[in-house]
Length: 298
Image (cartoon, rainbow, N blue to C red; front, side, top):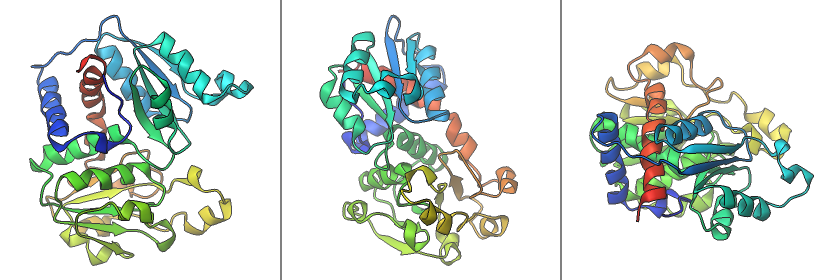
């Protein structure tokens, strides 16, 4: 058993092994089970896709699921601290899947709990299982992650999916990474300092759109802004429209961790580059494989 806190908890070969097992799972050649196991879903922050796909994965493996989806329904709302809540959950379950609005909350929980903790998103820092899904979609499309040109477009300052993905690419030798955003939403310096591949910060997507293999788009993370006036200054400051996609290569792809607000024109959904719903479809099978590995692995 092991904790999953950061995408860099894994080696490149381990990630590729998860992908191989996910392929086998989708083909019906690998049928993992977690009968008589209980998975605790500790979602201190709202979630739809991540929470439901983890629940779906656990149920598909024969496990039972318990948990909550907001602080309002918890003793936390009465003053109980996070540490006591985690100690309670580990008594009831074999694994804790946790989302929290504060940076580092999942790591803190893992230090307390004797049962494995899976980070389902903490603050603006990491979302390692979403990153596995994102990279798996690239792997399924191109057959490799190596040597590709990536463009990250949108709120790169607060989007934890971007932070995790940028870290993951340090394992895979991308040809080039373009970081495309308005100035206030650029990648934080502590993330840039850890990158070991060529990258360039860009303000206008039209400068580079024709070079990109994978365009990764995020919404503006309104809930991370401490000042509503600052959010108002940047909201709707970028968008992928049909003309932008017409400038892409035909074999390039667009990914988005969802939910989408207005940053991708809905007319793009039917264009061949739009792969974000295919990307979402990989969530349950990959998380099934990962849950089994975490609970039953060495």
